[in-house]
Amino acid sequence: MATSVEARRGVPVPEQRIVLWGVDWDVYETMLKLVGDRPIRLTYDRGNLELMSPSHDHERYKRLLGRMIETLTLELGLPCDATGSTTWRKPLEDRGLEPDECYYLTNAERVVGRRIDLSVDPPPDLAIEVEISRSALDRMGIYAALGVPEVWRFDGEALRVEQLQADGTYREVIASPGLPFLSSEEVVRWLRLAETMGQTPWLRQFREWVRDELAPRFGGR
Image (cartoon, rainbow, N blue to C red):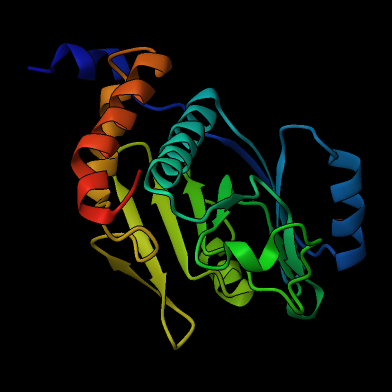
């Protein structure tokens, strides 16, 4: 029998996706300008362009994950520079995308106050991908081309933490390389808890957990 929480959750609503095939880079750049700040995410992979409209569930999960990372780094006194859904692209690789959230952690101090240029600056240390429906394009291949060391992939049920390998592929790992004290199971446990209460009391509980359980062991405030 389903629990009351499971019954309340239901099936996460997927994103809406459209793929345009045979699109050149100039059209991609034009589409980025036309979309502007509208809630549409563009993924470009060597001539193919996907437009994704995020669902309410998609946006809720991405903000919960983002708030966890931002609270965690704040309470533990860790460097963190949040860059949200910045469009990251490499014309020479003919690829570009927009994460749901992304963060500079190890490299935060290197990019503070800079207009980031991936030809000379490092990519974000961590990207968040909420993928209730899977992209038709190879977004992980794009992340690899950009050199992003770590990607969190959440499908509405399970979280996969993937680390970039020397051969340019990603391998699933148990815990976050950038935040090694936080396991994927722990992250999902907090996401499930958020479905039983409002975000303000949930975030307060998460902050208290970080202070009580993690800060004493990892030197946070």
